[in-house]
Length: 259
Image 1 (cartoon, rainbow, N blue to C red):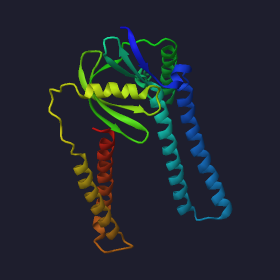
Image 2 (cartoon, rainbow, N blue to C red):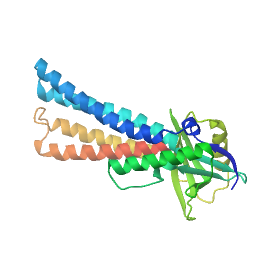
Image 3 (tube, one colour):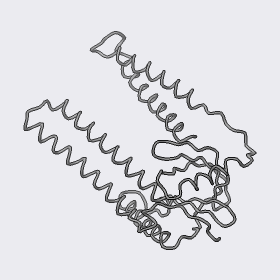
């Protein structure tokens, strides 16, 4: 099929460094977190700080730093790995090249897959073509704009002719971004034979948030230091707090993804 337009990151158009950046970024984050923990532990021992409380703060800081850097790395990798294709007959296709190859679990398998993805992206940068693994976007169900990206909920046709729904993320800053958004909007107005589903995420967020707050409150009141409620319910309330927090986080993510 002749290509009318291809959307890819500027990095891919020049010369992709997806594999080097992804693998090197993961190694760098792990090294930085390890160095921070060792340096903090050495500093606390040198200054004679309380080990228990300082160690907890140090672990929390290292974890927070690792999560922030991992999110930034993942966002950059997602931008580089996503390619959209528009053919001459106005059919829109998408491919997330991160799932292009699989070499088993573990870091080594992931690194091999990332380097193969980099080689594929470099080929696309030199001479774009519609790969066999691309999926056709039949209809756009929803577009949700976030601070750094668009969450695009699509109805797709797999290469095996199977119809699915999937959410893709378009990181802001891609060349000719407005033109691609117009193509998405065109496919939002096409006739839909399916009834639109009601968005129940806000209600679920509210209910799970209230339950989480109630569980945390009972957990605090039943703590031996406070001792306002029976201590027998402390650990069950703690478990319920973790479970409801995960549920709350799940619905928040669904709402942010526009699902």
